[in-house]
Image (tube, rainbow, N blue to C red; front, side, top):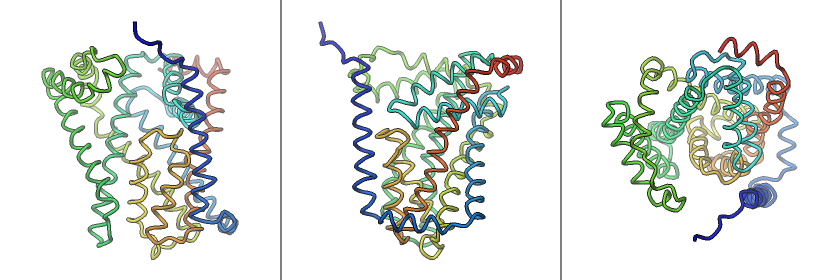
Amino acid sequence: MGSPKPAPTRNRAVKIVVSLLVVGLLFGVFLPQVADFTDVWRVLTHMTWLEAATLGLAAGWNLVTYWVLMMTSLPGLSLAQAMVATETSTAIANTVPGGPAFGMGITYRMFSSWGFSRRSVTLAVTVSGLADLLAKLAMPAAALLFLVTTGDTSAGLAPIAVVGGATLIGLAAIFWMTLSSEAGARRAGGLLQHAATPLLRRRGTEDARWGDSFVAFRREAIGLLSARRWWIIGAALLSHVSLYLVLLVALRHVGVSEQQVEWDEALGAFAFVRFLSAIPITPGGLGVVELGLSAALAYAGGPTAEVVAAVLVFRVLTFLIQIPFGAITYSYWQHSSRWRAEASEAG
């Protein structure tokens, strides 16, 4: 007999403790090495109401783009439904270790209450997730291209761009094989399963048949993608560009000029950190994103106090604000039977 597996509750507690320690070190030790928080507060208090308002508008539009991506991936979904499901799952993902898995469970419950089948929801979540991943991988390569075109130094971004570009090409090839034919889908699944064999063995799931799963996915996805693939890809790119624009507006509004950090340098820093934040060290990359962005932008030439102030504003508007917003949307969905009844009829 094998050794008993650790209790899930214990594993979850360990992850929470480790995440809290990492966040505490990043905010309490490392980030203050980049800039003094007293100077950061001074910069923040000098923002005008007009600057704060335009930042709020940019952040609001950024939230809407995530809802649009889900709407393009799930035919029949309304904007209000997309808002409730997206903000609730994001709030959970941003709050606890392993949050994305809990958020996914809530998402399925919400869509089921609105009359969507589990199969259509699974397809929508998978397709939108793939489109989002492809956009995230494409950004480092795009940033490096802009930097090289304008003559800026880009040695620090080059490795990330190469890895992101190679991964993007590989995923695109797998995607093309999957959609080309059933034989191609089976071959694509087999290739990915072979690559993941070491991890599958460690988890005890190496007997899973990925080829059959890819064939089933192709049968489900081909209709959706034939009609909406460019809308889905466009929505994913729009969400990433909108998120970057919130950072750029924050930089300009706190006093980081184009001469200090150019737009393409800011894009390079943004793409670099977005790529690294895919590794789930802390919920929503809390602490990791703040430190990484601040260090990258300061290295590009930005004054440290202004850079840290812009990064903190950016994170409040794109990360922190979604937690109370998601709590409100979840509470509304849970307690409003009228909302669910009407939505179910529409779905």
